[in-house]
Length: 181
Image (cartoon, rainbow, N blue to C red; front, side, top):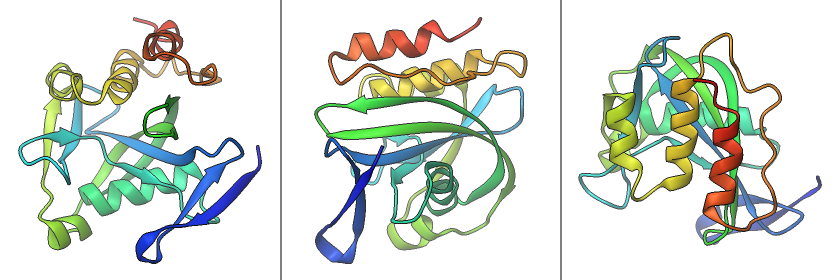
């Protein structure tokens, strides 16, 4: 799939796919390979809300590199990238997002978004994290559910391919079909 690059306000350059969707990556940061605890970060826009680290691809950056960068910038963590969990399309936001799992190996005392915008991070048990984000971030919630129900014997290989943007239910169903409990 070819991409086109478009400049945005504030000297930021964003990467778009051939259909005009902004390319993004999210990083599910797990405490260990058991995937029982996940690290969420405070929302940039909604005080008291939590979300998954993620953001737009930069030119010449792969989705996995974006996921690693966003985990470091937003949550102050580094780790071993574990697997591609899946992908989703947000029709309203006109974005296509790949979601990766990371096993955290290092937590920094201070990090970029903490210093610049006061962002915080918090470890959640997976069911609590799902509950925290499900009403506002349904796509991210489905990916988190898939990651939490996957173990080392049941990785998503290859990751599911989502249909063209249609309904949230159709997109969620594709991801959940690949979840082996």
